[in-house]
Length: 289
Ligand code: A3P
Image (cartoon, rainbow, N blue to C red; front, side, top):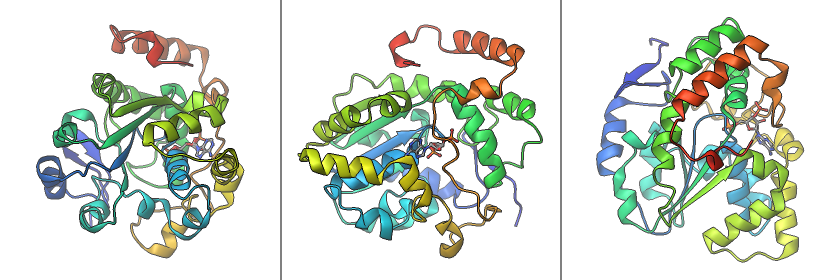
């Protein structure tokens, strides 16, 4: 099998776990239900963290679900083969995940009461996280160096395409009443307040103790040690073979601003310039870092 990512509608997808026909079918035919909740992110923005939080909100803080089911079974990715095969028969209310840019996301969702939570993260940290993730699994060919990945990222030559296009697309839906816009940074800074906001949005009533339990079992330390959240279960499930390197996990540092430890002054300036150009016209409150 060729281990090259493929292009679908101008966007790169990983070589395994995805299929162009299924992507097309999902885009046109996927049937949403009013009680679906969709976790929407650009990769490396804290997706898995949000999946843990939502799983725990649904279980009222009981950790059994996050300890017994891997994250991709708790909230299957809409656009993957796994999602294609399992979502139609999954018990409601369903949690699901997607990284699709709005342009190729099934628009039928906007005619339902399904809810979408969009989690944004400082793209500089997304870039650094993605670079190191490239050493955990081989999605695109391993970047040789950060400068090389820096170029790929800014050109949108990475899986799921350009961060800037993703944000521009989804931010156009911010006024849709069923969309909650959150940032990784606010989730870090005020975890309890943000979990409460999510509960309110989902119509879930949790006691303060249950919220405490959600926070405990979705904390960085707990998730790092939890096989069902840290990616190590991937090998046991034999689901995909992304040349996963043994012992490496999805949970690397879990902080905001790590880019400052990795960008040179010249890279930081170049990034700022492109950021300004590519986000022109978007409200600054979208970027709370
Ligand atoms: P870093 O590589 O910067 O550490 P995704 O799930 O979208 O792939 O995002 C992965 C990023 O989210 C990683 O960032 C990971 O450490 C961070 N993350 C995952 N769980 C977290 C948690 N409980 N608290 C803070 N950050 C978390």
